[in-house]
Length: 388
Image 1: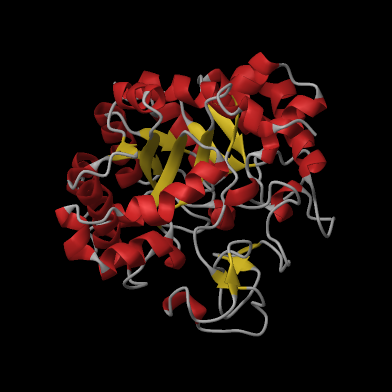
Image 2 (image 1 turned 90 degrees about the horizontal axis):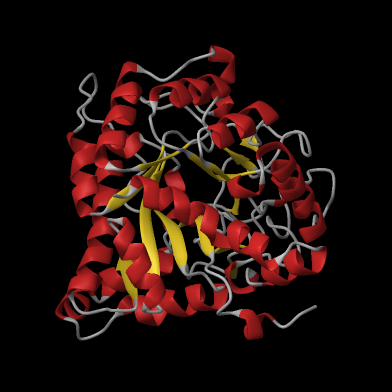
């Protein structure tokens, strides 16, 4: 293998999907007075070392969404907006207090500034539209606009299940397109300049979204169904549609999505998905969305219960096993992801080992120019087009 450290300045690397680190939020809340005064920078103590080890320059950071694990304070829909609001407030407060190691990007020029000045560019996103829902029977666009003003720049419309915007992949039997509210959200996202993310959206909602939006879309963390027939993976038709729209498909590193038949899929299995997507869509429409888990969770999920609400010090933990259903281990919102020692592919299997993908791509035979596109340039092109 080649030495990545010698090539660290050769590529701009984008991680297309990861949840905001729970340890970071917990630590900020414990030290809020010192953090907002600038006496300490929690981001530099907790988050910066992980992202630097990962090797990323730009990260799509989910600050909330549909799944219960993304909600720190309550599993109820009523508080999902406030949870996302608080996480955006944490990022803004750190920045305002003088933490200069990251930029919460609101426009394309912020991304360029971060890259030139060796800062981490953060694009705040939602992993599902439930935080945008208002009271029952009252759907307002004000939630989207409020989060936008705080820095939200990406929106995945659904998780696996259903919300008021549309149906996720676990609800395909309904054949539901976007709801009326979902259609309004798409139109407003286009107007504001928010990147729309089709990951986990049902096929019917996906093609409806393609019709409704005027902008390129991304799929931030999926693999090719033709290579691994998993409900979360996407068809060749979806891959083609994203490419024709000028968008990008970012491949997930989740083992079950990469190769559900192998106990421990590795980077060679991932490269099959990358090859396939490039053959269908072209080199300008592929990226990486490992979906590394931000949550320290028990190593043995089959034995331990009740961990999701007890914080990171409850038991022996790691970041290789994302928070899943406590009652039904291996399932997330009606989709089976398996019970594994490591939920990610072998090799680049966590934040700390993500950089290994650079060597894997080069060793596999991709040119340096093509690696630049896969690792970051393709997504940056979309960001610059939308975040004007």
